Image 1 (cartoon, rainbow, N blue to C red):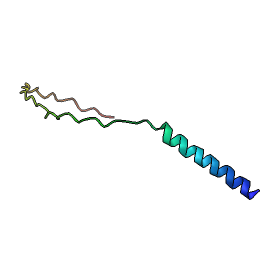
Image 2: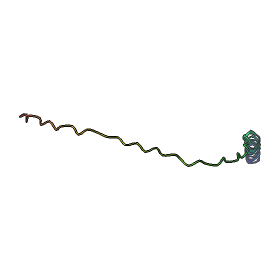
Image 3: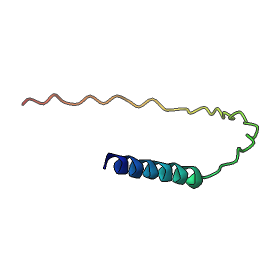
Image 4: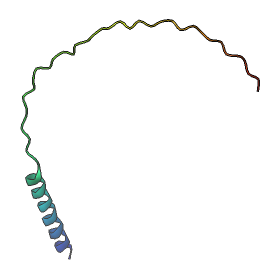
Length: 60
């Protein structure tokens, strides 16, 4: 009985490795294109100073 269990587990492991080997997707290495450095565009944002508004104190 111990021999049967060992044999069954060994066969299942062998089938598992065969499925693992043949089911893997073969990927080819892509040639990396030359990476371009990012271009930074600098714009000046002018903001008008907003007059500060004071709120009335509220009591609670």
